[in-house]
Image (tube, rainbow over all chains, first blue to last red; front, top):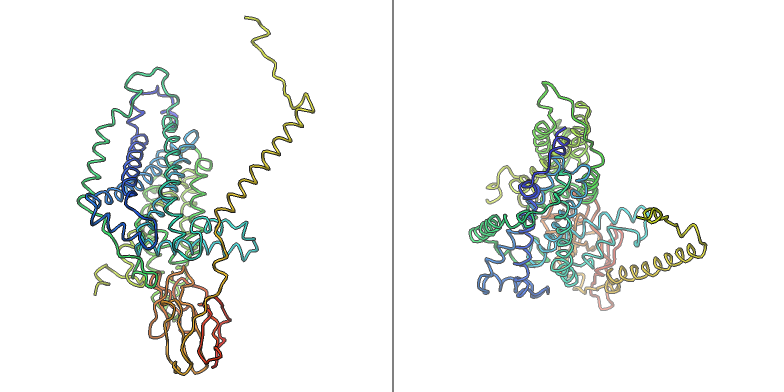
Length: 425
Length: 163
Ligand code: FES
């Protein structure tokens, strides 16, 4: 209904830039340019070599004039880029821009998100610090766990995607020179080129994807350079990023130590949901769930229809968004508490609570309950759209809860702590 | 202006002439073949070389009597632990079977700081996300009486080495 109304409206010229998606797209573009620019400059001093990488980053931070600021700028631009692409995807979904003709834009955004995350992941390894080194070791082994399952099912090494991907990205089982060479090549050139091409293609999709039927044929000077009007915004972004990098400098972590990992070692915030999932099961949390989630998002334009949901009447706590938000936060916290409880016990005793926890703790139960909830929401409101809204809300809410949980409740040896002060003494 | 010009008749070449369709088929096949060859070559280029890992590293240790029962020695920068028991010697790999972090030895057993897996001295996974036991490595004795560990050769769990 809402969509049809928008489509029948005559095309308003300002909408091209004032539309949320287009504005956010512009921010993404600017952030990409800023991180590329700062990256190019950082590359002047960086040496992609296991023995020298850390020292060269040290030089950038401590010796090169403005090096520390530039590195922080690179860091903040990249982090904001991730926030913006996630916001873009959420916006597209909740505003239903991803349906029909918007589906290309939606899929381009998904690819952008994957590419941006890969760039962040490869970039994490470059300084050769503790987090980067162990993150890379763990990443290689996550692919390994997927490969092992396929091998045990009898697939030859040449038809084993995780194994091939592991060979392609990490080059060897031992994380070292070869991995650094590939990661720096990917981070400096290959991924940014793909990102640039995709961003350009994405910019061509904006009018259609925001459910505006056609671009006006007459080009007035202002609409020919729509970005020009956004130059104040550009300055604003740059200024706020500079302020951020000045105020919150990215500190240099300790050098990688292949004998002793940090305790605890936390992934950067955007990988924390995966880190938490992986700490329950490497195969399900690291391979199966992420792949299923990506397939779900990719197929979303097909499976959810434009049918209008039936009013839920007075059961407002079941509303697809708010109800799911409340439910998924509670369920995620409850599940995490249960599994931490199980992990803290060494042997099974007859305690009833422990029995329940054992029954509830496995990862498939967690994902299954989220699925059942969404199916129930879709069924009760007799609208597929509501069901998928519930599933998407669940996904977002659980990710945020897991980020919070890893940050504040996971202490040394990955043990549950009630508050961060618990592990300091 | 001319009526016959405004509606050009489209001739489907593949249907009209056998020669053309044959040429199209063969050229498509030839193109596919050459591109897939190039693609396969590129893929093979990108995948890692395996030769480096084939050679087994052998680590020579002291004489057996230097390790009385009950000792627990870290070797290879903490990646292998040698344990001496009443039943004999054995060496366990210290790489976590969950996702490959290096384990830290405790008084009994090993703990993984990455996601909290706990292994006992024999290397069985007791707690946490790790499922498989730690692998045992082959131990041997040189003719001069020194012990050695073959760092890349696994043996069955429970094969103690008696010197
Ligand atoms: S790597 Fe040891 S528990 Fe995950």
